[in-house]
Amino acid sequence: MTLKLNFEAVEMAGLVLAKVGNPSRDEPLQTSKQLFNVSDEDQETLCPLFLKPFRNLVGQRFTHHSSLEKNEVNNSAKAIFEDDSALLAQGCEIATRLYSKSSHPNIKSGDLCISLIKNIDMDGEMKRAICILKSESMTPFLSISTRDGDLELATEQGINPEKIDKGCLILEHLDKKGFYVLTFDRGGSESRFWVRDFLGVRPIPDSALLSKRVAEMAVNAVSPDAVAEDSPPWDVNEPAQEALTYLKGQKNFSLQEFEEQALRTDAAKSRFADERKRLEEEEGIKLEENFDISKRDVTKAQKFMKSIMKLDTGVEIRLRPKVVEKPGEVLEKGYDEERKMSYIKVYFNEDLA
Image (tube, rainbow, N blue to C red; front, side):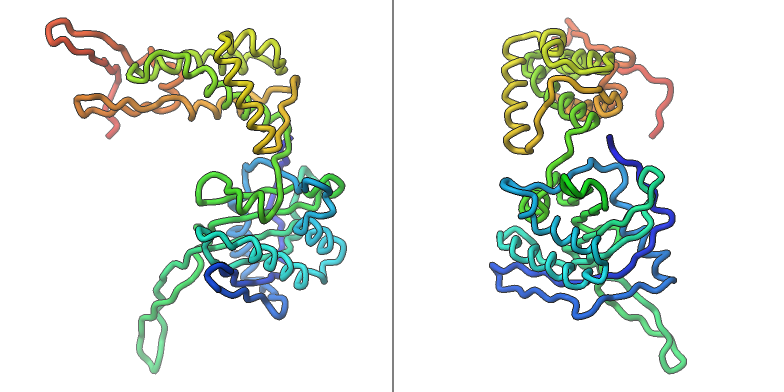
């Protein structure tokens, strides 16, 4: 189950800084020579900014194809949790590992912050965590200062905390199986570079994750069985909506029953089997044949349904999720015999533009 985290009482117990270049471009690695201590005034500003991106993320854990003891970031985290005076040395080790994994031409150089966070409330229990943030872009900002009795304007480059590119929060939890980890990557979907190559983490297959993945795979599996792509979304989405409605109506997932009741056709079952195999091979997630269904996570799969119609007359119709789910309540499709053209009728109460 996804952990509930409260960051209200957190404290930053030290900060390791680094500039991580790309070795393939002969860019250097520069790391802190001493630990940076955050002042009490800056604690109130930095802690919320550092931890804000880690809300409502899927839990993951460190892994290694041969043995967990060979996962370098997990080992560094373990050393810091055992002795927080090791933060500087192990923080530099983490930066060195990131540098060694940054050789691909597409990987950008950036600034790295590694901090030890104390007093995270995890389901009522106070825990420590290691926060790793990487910023790959600098933001220009202006400052007005006083000099010789007059005012002057200066321009500088700095990190925008709201636009940090990559992050990782390692919680002091599940150390025997690989610490509990939360990650994000602003570049889009979780990149192989950050999640797999550098951190070496995989999602924890709890009911929330499995429900989400099954729902997504179901939408992909049944959609090709729908009518032609030039048909309206409510026709194209009908099989997928039926599959999601089935899942939301169940408390427990049964793979055999799901295939019979929701997938139905041999083609859809075959595509679902292919998706299941890809999930295990590429993401390392084994789909259990029975688990508790998280209805909230099933609903998230609706974003994969068709929601845009691009018509040959230059008109584009974009549907919001609640309309995608029940289009018949406000939309109607027909055919005008006089014009020899199809039409869509939209019902509404008022124009909100």
